[in-house]
Length: 122
Image 1 (cartoon, rainbow, N blue to C red):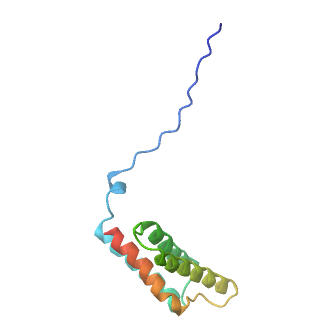
Image 2: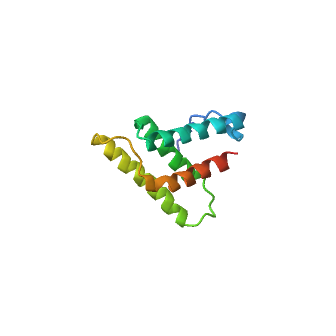
Image 3: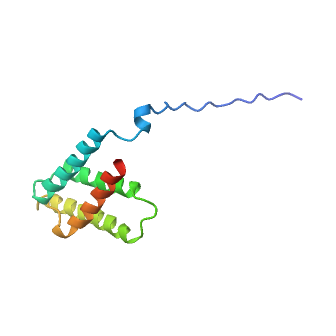
């Protein structure tokens, strides 16, 4: 009976994470990101938005969603949905050449999303 050799396929090894990647963000970086997020919100609320600004705000919504505490109740889910829907509406308005503006009713949702991010980064 012939022996069959087992060939092992080696998986590519992943580069290990650095110490900086594993530790919390430095306070200066958190402040810079928070300022970037707030400036993006101010720009789009004042009608001076762009695709880059909208993408920054989209990042805020999604990062805040993933960073939220698992104990948060489901009503917070509505705030994230409303913020995402407002960004979608803003993008559609911009595609129709009606400007990059954010509905005023959505301000509370953005404040909540921003709060999740800044409180969890510290």
